[in-house]
Image (cartoon, rainbow, N blue to C red):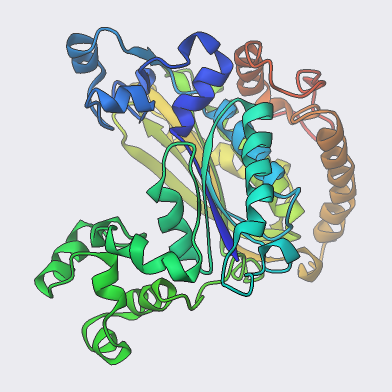
Length: 422
C-alpha cells in the first residue's frame, strides 16, 4: 500500500509554527518578491490567489499578515517531516518540498483484511500525523491506496488535516466526485481534450476500456488509467537506482544585491552544497554550469568542461570564479545564483592523468569525507570554504530567530579547512 503525504499550506504553516501569533490568521508569504507565493487557509478563504500582487492584497485585505519567504526554514521543516515518515518505513520518495510518497507494502498492518478493509493501518497513519503536529507544529493530509495516483487523489479529497484510507471497494465513489482536471498529472489543456471525449470525472476515464484508452491517449495517460484502476505502474522510489544525470543547487537571497563579493559568496556556497551532495552519491562531475539571476529575472549563465571529473569544490569554485567575472555586471541588482553539476560519473571510475592530479584530488577527497562527517554531526557549514563566508554569515543572522534548529547548528568555523583562499 502507498501513502501520499501533503503538507497543508506548507509555507504559511511553517511561518505560523515559527511565530505562534500567526496561527489562525490570514497569512501570505512572498513579501520579498512583491507577489503571493503561498497562503494560509484563512487567506485562501478571502479569495487571495498565488501571484496576486502584494500591493493589491494590502489594499483589499488589510487584515492579512504578509511575511517574507524563509526557504531555509521550509527546507528544515521538510527534512524533519520526511524523517518522521521514515520512522515507519524506509521506502520514502520525496516528491516536492511538502509532498512525499511512502510504500508500506511490507508492513503487516497495511495488508488488506479479508473483506478488503485497510482500517488496521489507521493507528500508524494517525501516529505519523500526531508526530508531525507535535514536533513541528504543522498539519498534513494523508491518503492511503494501492497506487500512487489513487493515494494522491485520496489525500487531496480531505484537506486540511485529512486522513483518507481508500480500499478498492471505495475507489469508484471517490473517483465519481473527482473532476478529471483534479487528477494528478492532468493540466488545463489535457482537461479540455478529455472533456471533448465526454470524460468529466476520474470515474468516466477509469471506466473506459484499455483498448479505447490506448487509441486516444499517450503513454502517460495510459499509465494513469491503470493506476486509477488499482494497478500500480510507478512504484515508490523505483527510479532511485537510475543514474543521476545532474545535480543542481540554487538559492535566492534577500535583500537583492549588487555587491560582487557577496553574490559570488552565495554562488560559492551553492557549489559547496552541490559537491557535498555529489560526494554523498559517489559521483563526480565532468562539466558544470553557473548562473546569476537579476532582480528582473534575467539569467546570465555559462559553463565549462573540466579536465578531470571531480567532486572537489575548490577546483569548481576556482573555475567558477573565471566565469563569474564574465557574467557579473555591476549595473544590475541580483536575486539568486546557482550551479549545476553535469556529465556525472562514478567517483570510483575517475580517469587517471599523466601528472598525478587525479591522485591528489582523491587524497584531498579523504579530507572532504572527514569534513562531511563533522558537518553532519555538529551542524551544517561548521567547516566551510572561505569564499562562502559572507553568505553563511548572513544565513546565521537569519537563523537567530529559528528556535527549532538543532543544537550546534550555529557553531561554525569561518575559516577554510584546506586549500587556497579565493
